[in-house]
Length: 110
Length: 120
Image 1 (spheres, rainbow over the protein chains, first blue to last red):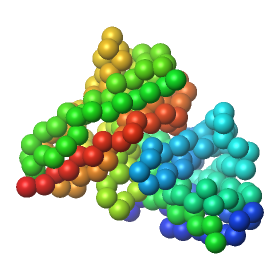
Image 2 (image 1 turned 135 degrees about the vertical axis):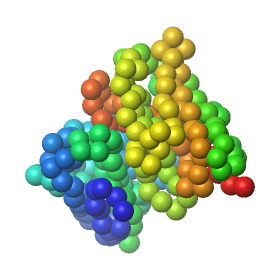
Image 3 (image 1 turned 45 degrees about the horizontal axis):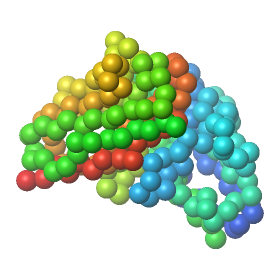
Image 4 (image 1 turned 120 degrees about the horizontal axis):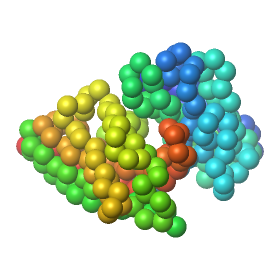
């Protein structure tokens, strides 16, 4: 069981919006920045969001992040078939003195 | 461009050891912390270890603490992960990853992944 809790799956039609939640506690999300990753099978994960809501260069503004209290959210607008992948939140946990990932969320474009 | 090239994976018997390496290029290696992350078959990503830019600080996921050792050679731009006392549950694809920003915990560049299989 992961320290950070994500829904196993979300889905929406092309062009629609999805949000993925990531729930933690004060020792992790409550006091550290959250990052989000897109992972396609057989490839290296890609950083989508860092420091809760910043996008690295090259990441389209269809991807957004937010954080409030002990939860974080990834939003994807204008959903495309190429967005079908697994998405993970991650942060540092002060109590564990370790990095932690969420269990991952599979995004399906209907 | 940034490149992280891993080597050293393979098949190992339970209780034995393996050493993974990650050759870095395209950035100032000695400036950034480096991570190891793994993904077991059918499972999600799991953070394994991090080493600070100068090697002075190292942190580990609980299940590998005391068995795995992360190290780096800044003169050779190389990151390593020594895996001892291997268990079946250590079977996974292992990725090395570069910290995105100095002092941050996000990871912006990843290696291609290295399969480690622990089986008798």
